Image (cartoon, rainbow, N blue to C red; front, top):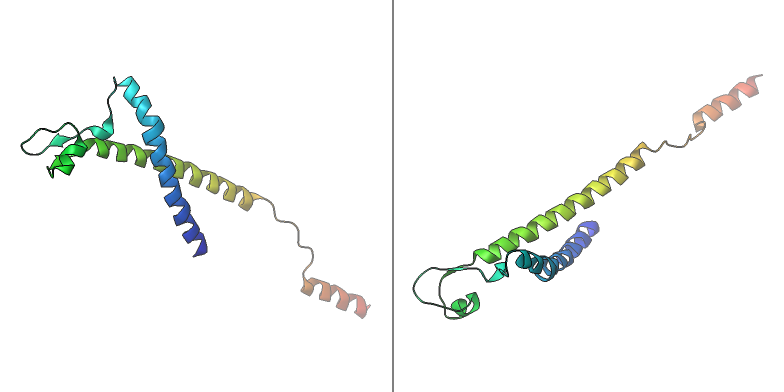
Length: 123
């Protein structure tokens, strides 16, 4: 139970790190190659009116289809899923290596030792 709690806490912190990675590092690179396009600001207005940004439209109470945020959520998910996949793969490899390691010979059991003692006493 404690391992699961630690995993959840680390997962939440990891999500913040990945969010920053995407918004602060990956988005600017994608924007550079796509001619300055900012995905997080992409939206479609569902109704009448004109607004300069998605923030203005939301503050005015307009219905917006924020597909840019959805694209960013997909990118976040792909990165998180890839990193979790790599972590699980590494853990499985480590676990498999531990299982394949030959166990030390425990030597004779207590019963074997007692049988040897009994046999030597009979002589």
